[in-house]
Amino acid sequence: GCYVITFIAPQGQTFTNASQYLNAPFCATAGQAVTGINAEVIAPGSETSAAGRVADGGGAGVSGVGIDLFTENRAAYLASTTTNSNGDYTLTLPGAGCYVITFIAPQGQTFTNASQYLNAPFCATAGQAVTGINAQTTGGGGAATLGDSVTNQDGSGEPNVEVVLYQATGDGSRGEYLRSAFTDGSGAYSLSVAAGCYVIDFVAPSGRTWVSTGTPWQQLVACVAAGESNLDLDGVLN
Image (cartoon, rainbow, N blue to C red; front, top):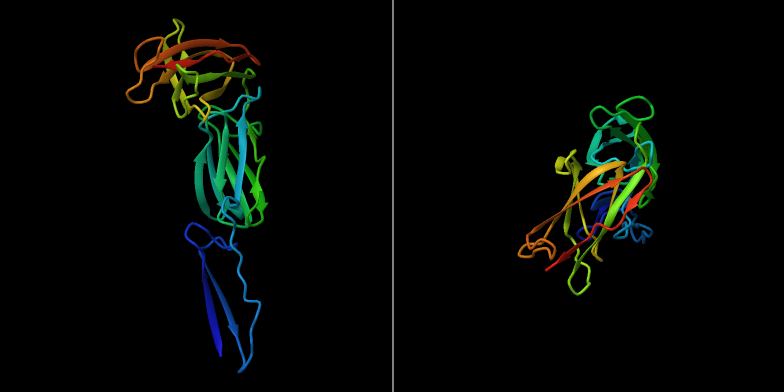
């Protein structure tokens, strides 16, 4: 007779059809041994994905750029994300196929195609990590970098500390909020910015204070020129 075998992938895994379920219909004659009814799961950590970066004309990452994912020819909307503080983004794809990523520039900015929107079509095979789907906005005075680390008094790095970036006003006080970042596993952080002056606020973990201020907040002001790095903006926790 004719039958259907349904494969059910382990929790959190999918088959190469991008689903946790896979149906395999087949027919058999009396006494027949039907072989080769197989299935393939995508190994954990090898999901199909797309990634890239949005930068300005000077190479500085542009944060907060809206990114929409569609099927081929923009036939159906799938998902959205935004670029992080360094202009990077990653999208998990539903599986093998062809897609379109639409970048949406921040209000008042355009891409080098002179539009606020930029479409990037691409195709991916099952389990493939497609990288380098990038975009560039007009303007920008050149990439600059702010950074250093957050440590404890014994010199060990403190991970997951929030670092808040503001535009600096003329008197060095906090102006427009720009974005937040967090220290990595070794306590380090890095912010890609355009040339200008900034205020950085370090937010101490709950119950902790900063050695320099004795408070849960520590504020630093820094100015950087195009292509310059200021990597001496640190904090030490009590």
